Amino acid sequence: MLTRYDVSILGGGIVGRTLALLLARERLRVALVERPPLPTAAPDIRAYALNAASRALLHGVRAWPDEPTAATPVQCMWVADAAPGATAACAPQASLRFDPDDGQPLAWIVDVPALEASLDRALRYQPGVERLDATQHPRPSAALTVICEGRHSASRAAEGFGYERQPYPHTAVAARLRTERPHGGVARQWFCGDSILALLPMDGPEGHLVALVWSVPHERAAALLALSAPAFAAAVAAACDHALGSMQTEGQPAGWPLERSLARPWVRPGLALAGDAAHAMHPLAGQGLNVGLGDVAELARVLREREYWRELGDLRLLRRYERARAAPVAAMLAATDALHALFAASDARVAALRRWGLRAVDRLEPLKHWFIEQAAGVASNRAHPSPVL
Image (cartoon, rainbow, N blue to C red; front, side, top):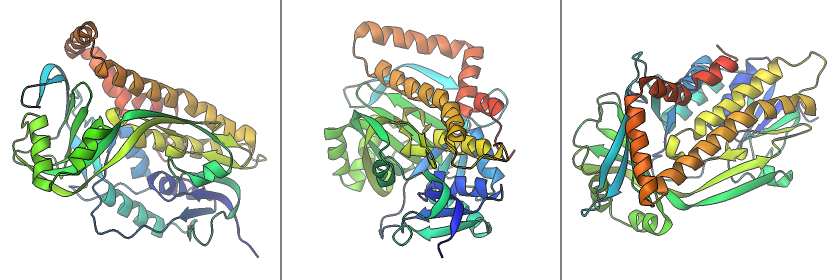
């Protein structure tokens, strides 16, 4: 006889695993349906910027990585409006620096393999979650199925959910680089017209390792990814005007096309979307995974606070989740779109106004503090406490 679960989660990424741990704490029987990882010789170079709300959520399910170098605190963020110079470096025209006034980190740059290992350990000690191979159990019977398969979800398409895509003319190039000088816990970002280059601190507060996220036009991305490792590192060092000295590439750089996307609707009877299966945004603000973890925190809260007589897959219940997430997700999509358009604008008047705005914000501490709160997820935490706090 087939086993019936309370909740079936399709997709074993960070969002899906976190949701499984959250729901198991509510004594729900959860099936986590995962695809076996593809064999690869290349090390995983991914890193995510996680805010205070996401860190609290992962701590609550005992999945925050314990290793001192696995999650590096961002003690300062430096953002520059730059223009390519004669040497292809992005020469800052105006800049903005965020330093927290309470001594708390602005965010944490987390090594993805370390985070996935922590989630795996937490799941091993959680008897309420059964992990299933998607090739053998594609769709277990459950009162509620949550699709967390990412942007290219086959299950979302099979269920007929609409998914509006708006491609950006850019590819995100990611890499890890060993630097001559320590990063000092500073996240650095250059807006260079048709490209955005970010160097994110890794390997501890005084480490010499950074994660690169470089949004560039597709043709330039292809050229960068075709370079040898030394030539690639030299191109990055030149583009950021040797801000951290010389560089060496660690691992194989990778790239993926960028898009803004949003599912409509997010829920149907017995079905819900979360994470990149529901939305995707430009990485310039580093909020993609934070928004996805916000989804699962809200869904877990809605399910926990449901009326005792209401089924988990009840459409009215699931619409509470959809409504609660609609505003913050729309705001983040709009903000990343607006920032991308603003910094990509080549009109001299727009550029002058943009630089004036950066300098003005840099002098207004209350406004900077508000930006820091938004990025840390403080406002959303106050409105919707995490189910594990």
